[in-house]
Structure formats: structure tokens, C-alpha cells
Amino acid sequence: MLIVHESCRERFLQVVKFAAENNLLDNLLDSLDYLRTYANREGCTYAKDEGKDTRCTLHNDFAPMSFLFSLDKFDGEQWSGWFGGGLIYSGPNQPLDGSGPAFTVGIGMPKVGWSVHT
Image 1 (cartoon, rainbow, N blue to C red):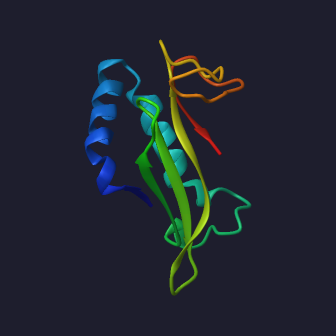
Image 2 (image 1 turned 45 degrees about the horizontal axis):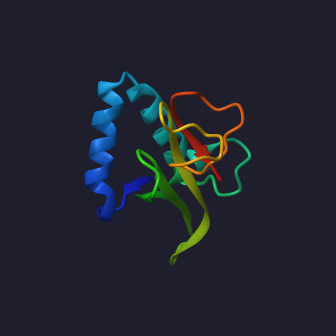
């Protein structure tokens, strides 16, 4: 399950529009799908009922075109935190070399597009 937190819905729509305008929509959608289905992967301890017991929530990040995410699991009674990370954009004026504005390092990541960092 993928949730866009209400505080970043406007940003999410801006990012989708940016991705579509720059021929990057497939990359963004693939990255979002990866997060949505993360717990459904073979060998995952929490892969039950097609991932209905896990959720990924997107939140605002300080880096342009990027998001923070939190993955939670449901134990049958309540949701609890599992782990988090970032869905980080890399492109012109935003390299993943540790410099601003992303202040993130990516190894073997695409020169342009989104990648998952934990």
C-alpha cells in the first residue's frame, strides 16, 4: 500500500507533472511501485496477504523533487514503524555526489531520475 501524506500531496502532484514533462514518468512510477510492493518480494518476512499488512507513506523532503518515506507493518492490531528512507531525485543541478541541494550520495544510481535510499 502506498500513501501520500496529506502534507505533501501538492508536492507529489508537482513531481508527477515534472516527471511527465521531462519524460521521466516511467522511472518515477517504477520507483513508487517498488516502494508500494516492497514487502511482497520473495523472502520478505512480512509478505502476507499480498502486502496488505505493510504500508509505505511518502512525506516531504528538503531536497527538490524528493520524498522521505516510512514503511510500517501491521501486527493485526496496530501499525508500527519498520524502517524509512528517501525517494531521491537526481538530475541537472542535483547530483548524488553529497553536494547540495540533495546532500545525498548515490553509487551506481541513474544520472537522471528517482532512486530509493535507506
